[in-house]
Amino acid sequence: MERLSIFDIYKIGVGPSSSHTLGPWKAALAFAQTIQETAYNRIEIHLFGSLAQTGKGHGTDIAVQLGLEGFDPKIIDTDRINMYITHIRNQCILQINGKNLSFNPRNDIHFHPQPLERHPNALTFRIFNDDIQVLQETYYSVGGGFIHKDGDPDISDDQPVLPYPIDTGRDLFDHILKTGSCISDIVYANECAFRSKEDIEFKINEIFETMVACVYKGCHTEGVLPGGLNVKRRACQLNKKHVGDAMYTNASEWLEAIKKLPQNFDRINKFISCFALAVNEENAALGRVVTSPTNGAAGVIPAVLLYYYCFCDFKGMDAVHRFLYTSGEIGCLFKKGATISAAVGGCQAEIGVSSAMAAGGLTEVLGGTPRQVLMAAEIAMEHHLGLTCDPIGGLVQIPCIERNTMGAVKAITAAHLALDGNPEDAIINFDLIVKTMWDTAIDMNTKYKETAQGGLAFNLPVAFPDC
Image 1 (cartoon, rainbow, N blue to C red):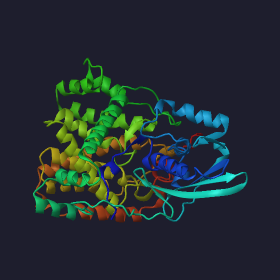
Image 2 (cartoon, rainbow, N blue to C red):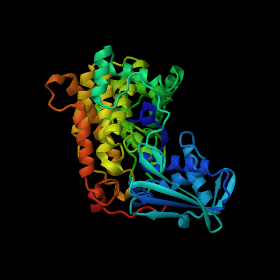
Image 3 (cartoon, rainbow, N blue to C red):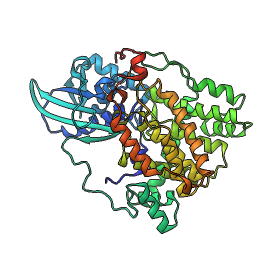
Image 4 (cartoon, helix red, strand yellow):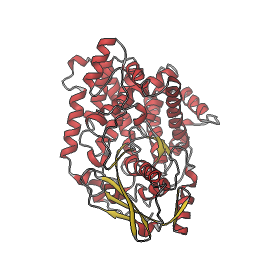
């Protein structure tokens, strides 16, 4: 199977959707790089399947325009996105590699509800010299910001040789039995085959800092989310209510203030929800988030990680790293054995996987054994099986934002059940739950897979916003 780094799972990008925003954005960036030597003066974009059905609500049309113009989702000034898109619309010009192309977003982005055969998230770029088509490429956004170009092999030839190749939970546990290591040590050793220790250290800290910055911003931003549903932000009011008169000027001081508050179940539970809401409100507003493993599920990992940071016996940044190594590997295993794409597997592939990741990561840093880590991940996913993806209006808002709070709480519950349990007594193992999740994904009706054609989206129909 493909060799995945945890940094393939944890990617910094822009909301609201990893498969409908970040993936198409990356596809547009990749396509722009292929046409530098081609004569052209006009471009069309064709969105298929789920990208067409909920693309406007997920900002797919915005993402592809920004990608074609060369903006990097990791560093773009998110406060200027609307300005960039307005400029393109008013000028009817896309600038690709320094060259102006005729482009009218209203006429040159085409939505085709019928999916292509290979994957429900497909997009095709066509460039023309006057009326003559000179190049066409199709890309698939396969979940979590991963993309595949049509015609390319699914697995590249330059895969790194890992000291501990892992395709299943059984593989991971076999390496642990042979080495006596914990899961995070095994994962770290594999990461060293992808990049230098210095790069790993930088990237893992960058992921954590981006998560904290996103939570902090979301907890200090009021207003109504874009898209037409008039969803009010709640994290800011929750934070004000429960942080009280604490004084702080930045994220670090804020977290320290939360640590010093009297701790009880009610306050802890509300802060977990506050952290998760904050991330996904930022995500819905085209803010910067970390895919974990997707944008729509980006609030679960930060909420559980900050639960550990603020309300448990925090062991320092090394524990944060171990949390992210362990949780990231669990995400890799679900991607290999099932899917992390809601368009393929419903919301069990997003919130379910993120909850399993968070449960495993938390169990490790709370002192759980490797078997308890996998047990926690299994428990969390077991109670998300069959979860549908039915975003009202095609927006990553209802029920998506609140689902992150539920996924976080389930992850914490799963971790504590595993820590107090005996894995030898467990009837269901990790690999069985991965297989079952994939079986469920295959059986799930397409209308419950990020199409906004079933469930809540059907019972409360809302026209897609005019983006």
